[in-house]
Length: 351
Image 1 (tube, one colour):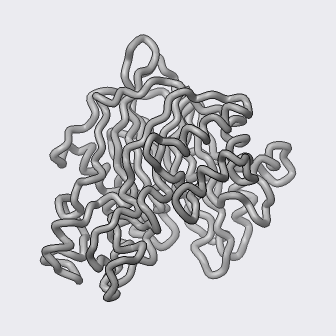
Image 2 (tube, helix red, strand yellow; image 1 turned 180 degrees about the vertical axis):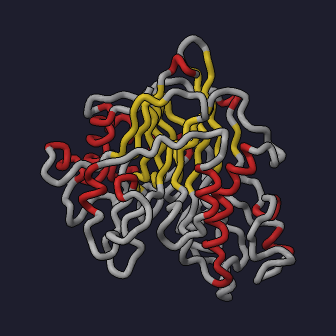
């Protein structure tokens, strides 16, 4: 049973543009659909795909993947926080109508959201959306809007959700009428965001949410069946700009295991001045950021199955440049996305 996560970056510049590109079989969505079909996941969590009513864009992308030989019948997405207007100045820049004055960064509602494609049916009645959970309600939160923050403001504190995109618990019906839960999220970047290191602290807390959740320290109970956590934390445990402790804490949590997916391509790509001296294992990187100045290649995408689930294989789809599969990544000088697909195979008999 192959689980996959990919920051696919199929968000349009405006509502409906991503759908247009998918329906027109444009270069970027076609290349990404071919790559997904090649990896052939049973469950795929996508980040960076625009959300719309009826999941029209998601269904169209599913059909494009199917045209390349791999069908995942079931589609699912909760609404996204990205682009949802607050009406308040959330960054302290004196304006209230910018893309960062929202529940999650976005030029329009649903931009670059989360979605799930699956060969197994989704069980909506057993699924939960935590995306309206307020930042202020997270234990030990670092929100700038509270009494101890740098921008104390009761109005913003009472309004700001923790999730920049979403935090979900999505239940799937796997063979023999058993159930497995997908814990899904995409955190915002630890940079940008205006005053008071707002994005830095929010990025930390979006990952810290899962540690508290698995500890039973939130109003929502942990899942009552086997699970896997799939998401983009935008946070490397050892390198980059974020507050790494949140990622270290989650990776060390006794309820999860880290298969440490790796690739030879990531090792090859790390031989640059900006990435060579990183502390973390180059093989586990999941994003290619060679620009100067910049953080370099980092591990920012994760699949963490519950402890006790048997992992049989794992990897990051990042072949070396001379490998036959490298063509699926597109033009190395102008790739359709900097992020790499992460996959983990599990033994369903261990669930």
